[in-house]
Image 1 (cartoon, rainbow, N blue to C red):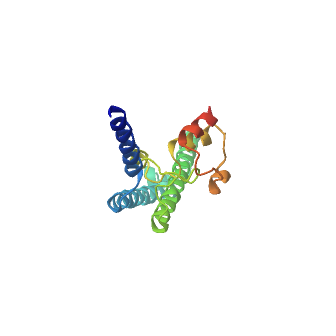
Image 2 (cartoon, helix red, strand yellow):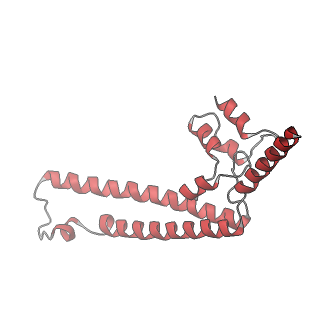
Image 3 (cartoon, helix red, strand yellow):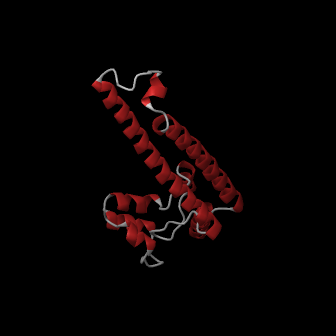
Length: 171
């Protein structure tokens, strides 16, 4: 009789885990709000960077009335600051694209599903990175070069393959 109880408790644990990985309507709403807030924050940041780095000339920034720089190093500093701002803006725009893609996945009802394995992405990962496209295990495989993003667009993993088996392949 004790063995039957153990089996029953194992079954309950397994079904609880799968339900815990599924996103509810409240979860989706929460992540959509997070994405929209982050999107707005990025738009403000990019706008400020454009105003500071690209639209302000050296004359405006320093109050210098002469068109010649005081020192050649000033030109280098100005160029470095502008290049740095352009790099930041580029990375912010890429993140903005990821956020827009995540919002589209919400509309298509595919949000929270790993594009590589087709399995649910853990809520903790979505809390940390709500625009995540891949589960942690698949993202590790991407980083290690074991799979490519092109493969993720068309997952060919059998339905019965578990995340544990994926990790074994990665090792």
